[in-house]
Image (tube, rainbow, N blue to C red; front, side, top):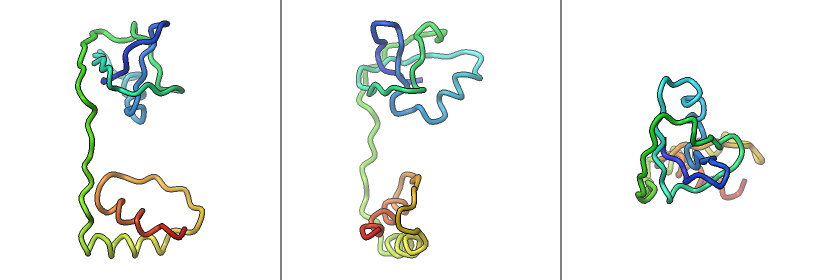
Length: 110
């Protein structure tokens, strides 16, 4: 699990991976912490004490990024169809990729 460096109390942050990683850590038989100085430190339920990990490995690499690609005309049309179904003020959880990007681009007036 990629984590931030520990704070003065020994807690690391799951940073950008707090979604399902916390549950996975609670149910795994062994855990490896990959401490990365580039992992952003977040608070809340994403803090784990360093003593929880069986193995600790320093892994200072740049964080993964996604370079967006311009949606195709078909993806834009799909985004437009979906955007019509979303009421003003709706709360959305979006995925990664051209279809979610096209939907969000069509929600400019919501």
